[in-house]
Image (cartoon, rainbow, N blue to C red):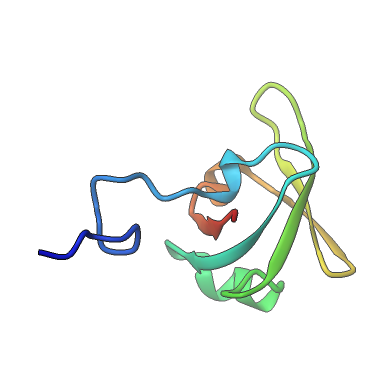
Length: 86
């Protein structure tokens, strides 16, 4: 019997952009929720490379660099951006 991978194993939490700290980068693998189309227009789409520049304390947003653009994303939105941090 094959071992399930991360994409099909629902018991393993998928890493999200909200899991990253400042200075860490990852590749976007998907976006969940109603904001997917809007975020795609801003460059947050599968295969996009992003880096967390800073995390504002006390539940504030993450400042993320995507290419030459910088975005401030609320933590609830960042938690719906699935990443591959390898």
